Image 1 (cartoon, rainbow, N blue to C red):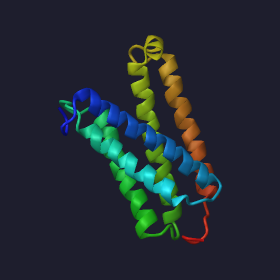
Image 2 (cartoon, one colour):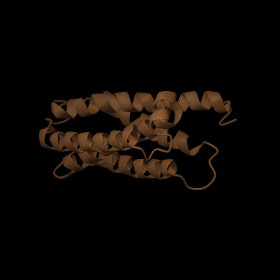
Image 3 (cartoon, helix red, strand yellow):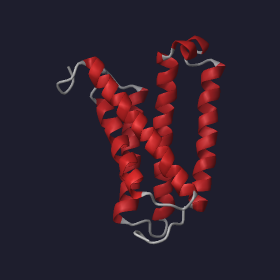
Image 4 (cartoon, rainbow, N blue to C red):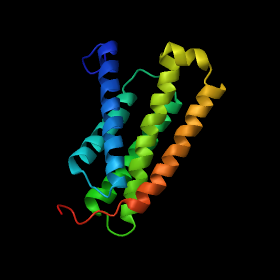
Length: 165
């Protein structure tokens, strides 16, 4: 039992939160590419991404794992994004800091999605049972390259007007 839920139910809740975080993050990044703030989507993305990491820490894991490291980095990145957005209001260099942090947080969620997909989906697991085979590596490198390109584009295009405009 984890917070009163069976392991299975808790896992489903964690995965649902993670998928909401990824979808809302994609909406936010697409908005950035069009210089749109999308405050409700942004709030949903930030909150569900934090919840993804927090619930990830609640699983009965013994010892340090790459997933726990990713969750810790994600929380730190989200703290920077929230600070830049809500306290610094995207002024000056905080705009690009926010964009970079938000895109990085989304990338980390997608990275975990890829790892989990190769572990849990039998077709993908058969292609890369040890996660060191070319299909897994190509998925990881392709995702990284795509997010770097998206991040660069978002930093250059996200120049929204004043909040509430």
